[in-house]
Image (cartoon, rainbow, N blue to C red; front, side, top):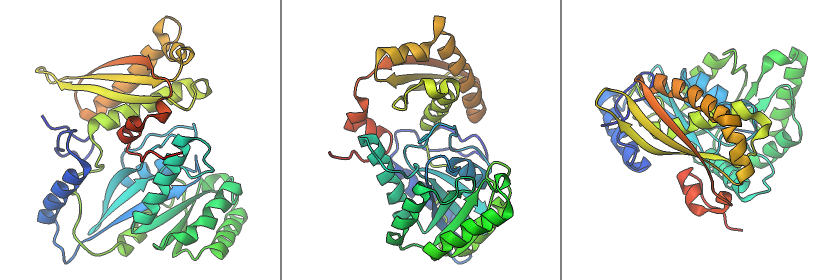
Amino acid sequence: MAEKTRSRRRELPPSGTTLAERSASASADAKQAVGDEDSRCGFIALIGAPNVGKSTLVNALVGSKVAIVSHKVQTTRAALRGIATAGGAQLVFIDTPGIFAPRRRLDRAMVANAWAGAHDADIAAVLIDAKRGLDAEAEALLGQLSEVRQPKILLINKIDLVEKPALLAIAKAANERIPFAATFMVSALAGDGVADVRSWLAAHVPAGPWHYPEDQITDAPLRQLAAEITREKLYLRLHQELPYRSTVETDQWKELRDGSTRIEQTIYVERESQRKIVLGKGGATIKAIGADARREIAGMVEAPVHLFLFVKVREHWGDDPERYRGMGLEFPEE
């Protein structure tokens, strides 16, 4: 049975279907609904340093949660697509990993993924944290933007935390470095300025048929979204206690005769000491993570969910090419 999206839902192909096959099928469906003459469609990559609010802004632009959010740096690992419509335009937002100076193999894979998203998109939307301003990470990002030939817009986020003169100074300095096509002041969390960004993009993406049906909000299968939800709850529950290199995989997704869904997931860590942290005393921590994840996944699939979580040690998973492919990342060579 096909999986369903949570909001503005439509039937999606089975989770084993490739991205290319899903895109081709969705594009064919979309062409039936939207004529080529009056429609617009474009891919917009949101790029920026870690924790500038990219995932929060994607969710705000789409109008529904499609990307996980936490205060832990580099929560986003692979580019995730959120889809919104504005008038006759379909906007496909690419939530990319944060761009920073990579040190480990996984870091390099994520940064490469972010830049690839920027180069492949029709428009690159560059996010700057208003509170942090043009710090070293923002300056490094601006320094590499000249290699991106696509039109670029500047989004200064978290404007509710900074006085107006400081915001204007950031905008002026950034535009002196890069010829941005437009500059927007937004608060992704509060929703301020989000509608203006959406309207501008709708008017500037290329003319052409939609790639996805009108009611689709992401191209990710539910088993991937469910794994991301559990990873979010893991980060939120453990904060700094859990090392960065942990991952979640959905092993089984079975829709039962009573209408409920049985899901089995495995949380992988690198050492036994980390496994004990995730489990918690008497299994209390893993139970709390499972309860939080189950509630949100049940809301997403609009059906009761039986979620079973397992915690296993997989040493050096960060050096396993198969794990990278599972996350949608290219495995970088040394």
